[in-house]
View (cartoon, rainbow, N blue to C red):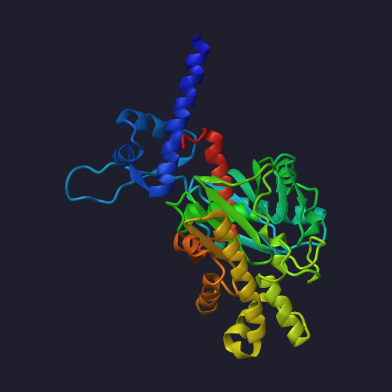
Length: 389
């Protein structure tokens, strides 16, 4: 083996070790070098060198330790929260937002900018760029990248949104690529269901899970699956589109152009439509939540309809993918403990008993904002070195 080959292998091994430490810090929080040695399985000298390298690159920071009664405590190492930043961009059918966090990924309302989704792609790019610049200026730290969460079918081979049923202005575009040209920062495109999976893995109840799924039942009906610790992508990255399974022949027209798609029946958007039809006027999400809480008896038919089809969607995911946990994202049904309990009762009647026994079904703790942040942090970790899973 040549000297150059040895040098390449040495560099790769060093980066793999550094990635292992990044993952340990992400999972365990601020840790001393001694603690990182224990949890990573690396030697103390290797940990020390890796930490020094990550400090120089601005990916981690050191903190003074909490005082201890015995001995001299070592300084704690954490993901860079003050000296480095990442941005998350959430593009959605009604509202978009931009959020800034440190590399530890803590999302706050104070560092979030929201605005109505513009009517054209050009106006959308202008609005997102302006919001990003305002957030960057307000944060003041070095920005390492931006995660852009989007709805619709994202073709990873083509690197574009090939079709967005609920936001057609995104069709055939890649807002991450266009923002990268405007801002001069690394921007990564993440399909919103995959973003929810990454967000739940980073900051929700899936931190120790390698086989779980997230069903997004908000506007559309999207599915993200983590299998063996990796996102399930399919041939072109478009796996998980359960929302466009036909549930009712000649049913309501879907944004995809077909009729009777499951997402026209099993989502918050479906319930909003049904409530609007009953009341004879459009109903917003906040008003709908208040109506369902205050006057549930007036809307039993609408609640039962969407409950039934959401249960069918959940049962299909469990029967097909056999996850250890299925997280359900939504506000009107999944966000209400009482209404969600009714959904779960119907799931029991729709799911294979053996598959259901292996799976916990819970509402998500993560959000699309958290998912967009998790998407860019996931990319930064993956681009640093390959996984050794």
